[in-house]
Amino acid sequence: MSELAVGNADTDEEEHPHPWPHIESMFTLVKVRKNSYIMRCLLCLPKQTDISAFKNSTSNLRKHVARIHPNKLAKYTDLLENHRKLDATAAGGAANETYKRLSRSAFAKCHALWNKTSRSTMAHETVERECKLQFLRPNQTRWSSLFLAVERIVRIHREQGEQAIRNVCTALKIKM
Ligand SMILES: [Zn+2]
Image (cartoon, rainbow, N blue to C red):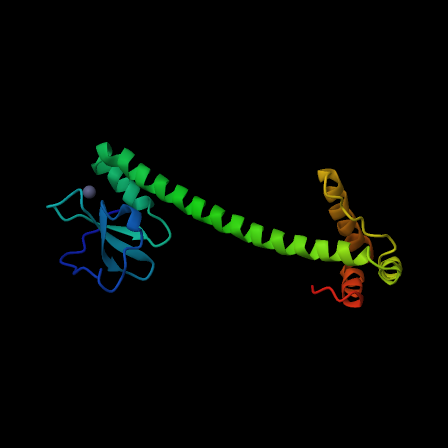
């Protein structure tokens, strides 16, 4: 059963925000139950049709639109689809920002390692002792040299463990 007579339920909208604002042009919130929302179909007005929808799913609303207002189904689908795209874009944007932030901070640390470990015999020996392999310092012009330099850090990290890199950073006073 997807529909349900609720009688003269007063609207709770002031206390409870619309759970799905993207479809508020079609459904308004009437009542909040434990596991469901009672939604009123605005397309049915002036007839009052209240539909119970599970809190985690609008599928009963879609069923109602499909059955009673088939000519509005495309619009309903559009509303949901646009909402989904917006959500995905927002999530993608956030992930991209996180990536940029992490990438900037990781490369800053790599460059500090490359600079300091190439500067002195003491640094060279510390790396030799802790890491068994030397860091490769990328040169400015070749992209592949940056790739190889990062790959070397990853290899040292894998073979000697994080502690080896930490020890080098501590010895050379590089902030981690
Ligand atoms: Zn309706």
